[in-house]
Image 1 (spheres, rainbow, N blue to C red):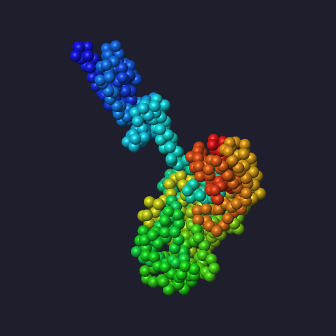
Image 2 (cartoon, rainbow, N blue to C red):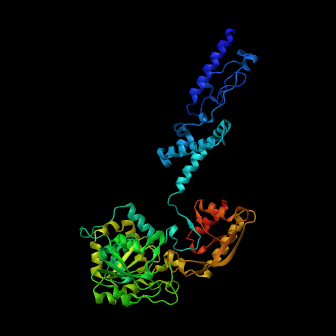
Image 3 (cartoon, rainbow, N blue to C red):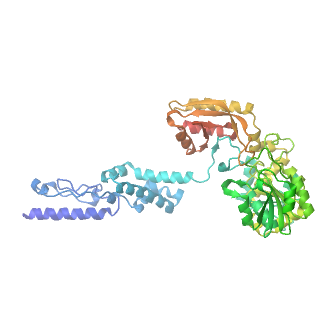
Length: 534
């Protein structure tokens, strides 16, 4: 063989070796080892030198075959992608570690496609040139940014929507909470004497003026209030409760399970539909620690029924010298000067329950009260003092932001401004007030939506209080009924939820329903903007 052929083969072998080393998982280097003419094609000319075509005769090139490119070798390394300018600028938003995880996920997805035979070397090159990998990483970053707690537009018509955060607070209340969170404050010190005090002294004063009673205490939610109550009075003892009041609320929170965790033994009395005072009396003994009444907030038993009222249970407790308690759940308060909720909802009043003589009454802050999340216990002085002395209380007590929010809410109600609280305002809105809003939104959507066969009409439907409050009460409400046309109702609902801001609606009989009752200030414009982006 002539010497020139030996030299050419040596040059080609070296070029192929350079090609193999240049990748090592990188994006630069050769896009293919050889072409049929014997030259080396190179995406980065400065990293490899071509071999002259004239050095090879056509009969020699026919003797060689082109090695097949391995698509895995075309995939960039994580570090290389992190160095790309468009990716590097994302690091301040996510942190390098999380960004590297997103890059790895994107590359792994391509590896899976290669393994399944769905992506070859040419496809990898094409995607890299289009910037698909960078876009994939960016989509992960955007998904991460949207996966946390973000504000939404509630168009479901469920006022106290558990999944969407229950009661929205008044802007002044939110401002008080932000102020408490962002600065030092008089949490446990008296500004006038300089001495240490209790963090909830001011709140308790306001609560007693609001609902009555001799003393009060607050913890982080009503479930915690019930847990503290049971553990304080009945740990190692028995708690007597009507069989028809053994409720389960959201998240599989069952009263019997809470009792077990609190260290008390459950004693059921009566039947599902009928329980009398005599049933409680017969169940009491030396080991009885508490007589408990629970409001069945999220279901109703109707027909042939009988229950033991709060006043009757309080009298029995005093007679037998056994503490009594009433878990109201949502709790209802109708202050003077505000449209009464008592005529709309079927919920026991907090003030009435306290006045019945029950030792301790518990209720939620973030339901009908319209305050931040909290569990309030109010009642007689000695039982409340025992609750405060329980070491468990420190683990359950309110933080400064919730304290500030509860104080601000109570102050608004006591100042005659209860009607301004969003929850109460939504629940008391009438059909006449809602209909113009619904018609205005419908007209705006008809102008901005360009989906084929899209139709919107205003019809009469019903809203609900939510969060287990009066489950059999429906509030007449004009709503927007939307035919999504070619878009599809499920796809439309999903797209709205994924938007910015997310919009939550409900689906009924293959139509999207938007209820204006639960729209807050500014939500009408946000809703139209969300549909304009479709």
